[in-house]
Length: 424
Image (cartoon, rainbow, N blue to C red; front, side, top):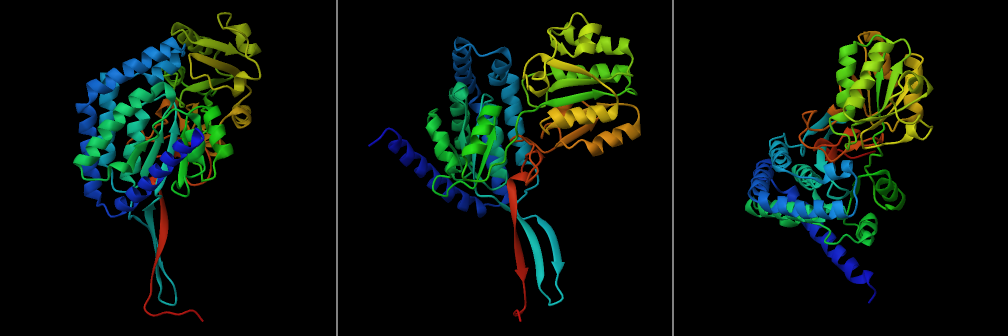
């Protein structure tokens, strides 16, 4: 027997168990799902000390392995983040049930009544990196939307994710939901991911990757089941000539520096050449004051000697996920739109302006999942949108775009009611 055969057998057993759990979830009431999720949130709080101990071990290993500051921040859990995780599960529990919603209804001249009804997708496989809170977010969203889930976290967060999973499964047991509705691949072997991408003999209906460009690219290239993915978050803030300088300072600083390691962090700052130079210089001073490295084009490199090395063509295409930002002077609104279209990843873009016509043009012309006016890009988040948690930000154009919450984890079916009609 080869090394992969026992793993393949184990993965197939997980797929069968998930499929059985998905069928059981179809019979669960909205109240039963909500009660079980509240029990999961309570279990996370009750297991808090064990989860933090496991995370401390992951953090120690990550430091030993030389992970950078931004990745360490994504990995770290503390009391505040643990409570935020539990609160997020509670909030998902209290959302309206997305399953069974009537999306549309109409009648045909022959008397047929046709309705489009939201249903669960079935079994979802989620492959993710670094952030252990994704374990709870993904499980809660899938359960609320009536889906079973097979999780595969990153090797750097394996201990943390396992501890969170134990709490979640205890909550499911207390809530009398099938514990196999949430499973986790029990190995960090990359071969297990490949097995998930084949669909586990038809068990997995959808794969969602959440992580860096390498992970998402592999999933998109190898998957034999549908993929709901987001690529990197090369997010832009455009400071228009009519921007309020104080708003621009606050929005740029928050967009970049609130948390540099999330996909909604701004990576490129575009500044209109007609925006006051002293106000632009102050924005850069703010960034430097928080130890952000600035990579400016020729205009900004000459204007602001404190900037780091000049920006290269590669910088406009880079998701830093760190305290680094590329800065470019643009010749007006249309030039900014062209730059975003050329280099952006269709994630989130924000315009800062007091000119409603310019804002409307930007919001209409920029083809990204989320476009903003006078707001920080870091609001690109399912929780901030009032959707509870999220699995990620979809940057494709089919099925789900933007924050992927409970409604986006459903599909639909048509229910047709007749009274003996037959087709001629």
